[in-house]
Image 1 (cartoon, rainbow, N blue to C red):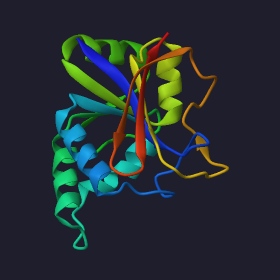
Image 2 (cartoon, one colour):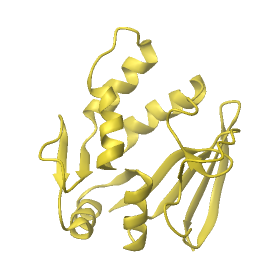
Image 3 (tube, rainbow, N blue to C red):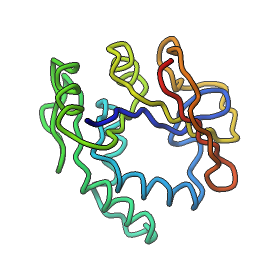
Length: 176
């Protein structure tokens, strides 16, 4: 049975913004390895559209960026959307019954399935489907933006903390 994991970078004041801070080389390497290891990813429409950046090659990319793109492209993806009519390569749409679709994925897969997008994570948290939360804390204060927790923070219990690279701490929580 797979574990559903909500993992995102966030500022010290709790906001997520992929444009506000980029991962340093050690953290980017961590994310390459992470993408290779997961059973797949579940995206909300907006986060999926952001991540589609990795579907196209860009001449300015370095070797690590090409490596990340290859890993991301090979990973199965499920996109929760009522407005999209199609998705890109190696991706499938989840329309109406999100709970049933995610339960089926968790039952049939092994390993971690990552959830990307605070609103989607909130919906899945409300359904009791998120098994783990990984907060990658960056030493940045944004003061505004989209919060990591799109709704009330669920009761959580810290199970691990580790430093990744020079500046990032990953905090791992499970529902309490």
